[in-house]
Image 1: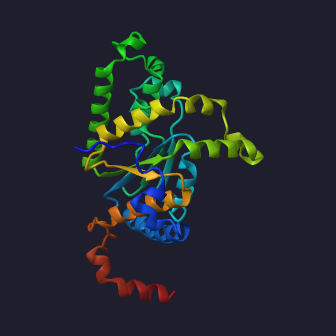
Image 2: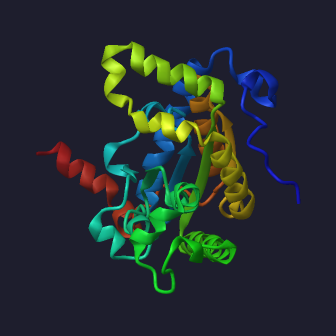
Image 3: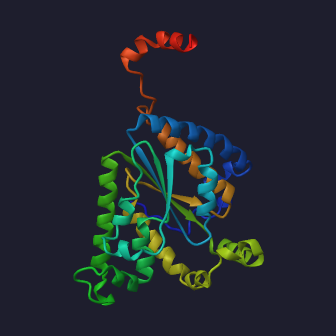
Amino acid sequence: MNTYKVSEFISLKNSETKVVIDDAEKELKHVRKKLGKLQDTLYAHGKYAVLICLQGMDTAGKDSLIREVFKDFNVRGVEVHSFKVPTDLELKHDYLWRHYIALPARGKFGVFNRTHYENVLVTRVHPGYIMGENIPGIRNVEDIDDAFWNKRFDQINAFEKHIVENGTLIFKFFLNLSKEEQKSRLLRRLNKQEKNWKFSPGDLKERKLWDIYQNYYEDAINRTSKPHAPWYAIPADDKPSARYIVAKIIYDALSAYSDIKEPELDSDIKLHIEAYKEQLDNE
C-alpha cells in the first residue's frame, strides 16, 4: 500500500487541483448552496449523521474554513465542537469520551475543529500529557511505548468503524500547510492589531517541533485512512481553494447516496391533501 507523505500536496501550484484555483470563491458559493440544500434533505431524511474532522497545524485555516463552507447551512442542522486541552471532567473518562458525546445525531452535521486525533498527535509529541489521563499501568513516561500507540490507533480505528456501522458518515481533512506559509500567517497575527488576540508564544514553541509533527501526521494518516473513514490531504496555503475543495468533496460524496431523500408523506395524508388545502383556503 502506498504511504502518504505530508511533504506532498502542499502547494496547489504543484498539484492536480490547480484547475480550481482561478475562481475558487465563486465556485465555493455555488457548491455550498447545493450542500446547504442537501443538508436540509439529510435532516428530513434522518438516517445518516455526517462527521467532518478537521486537523492541521496552527494557522492552517480551520476556523475560517468552517465559517465559509457551512455558511448556507440551517443552524439547527450543524454543530461545531472545538477540542482544547481536556478539562478535569474529561480527564476522568477515557480519551474518546468527550468526542463520543459530541457526535452528531442522525440528520445532522457535526464538525470537529481538532479531533480525537489530537490524542495521537499532540500527546505523541508531548507524551507527558498522557500522565494526566491517569491510565492504569502507565506509571511514568517511559511506559508510553510503541505498543501503547499501536493500541491507541487500533482503538481509534475501532471507534470510527463502530460509528460508521451505525449511520455516521466520516470525512477527515488534513489541512496541509507549508512551514513558510505558517510563518507568514503568524507574522500577520503580530502585525495586525485586530489579529493579535489569536497569537500565543506557544505557537512559536510548537513551530520548533514542526518536523516531529509532520512525521506523526504521516503515521496517523497512513494508519487510519480507511475506505469507510478516509483522510483527504488538502493543500492549505491558498485558503479559498482549500475551502472549495473541502466543500466539493463533501457534496460529491454525499450526492452519491441515492437513498438520501425527503421522506414521503403518509399515504393517508397524501390521499386527503386536496381536502387539507381546501380547508385552509376556506378559513
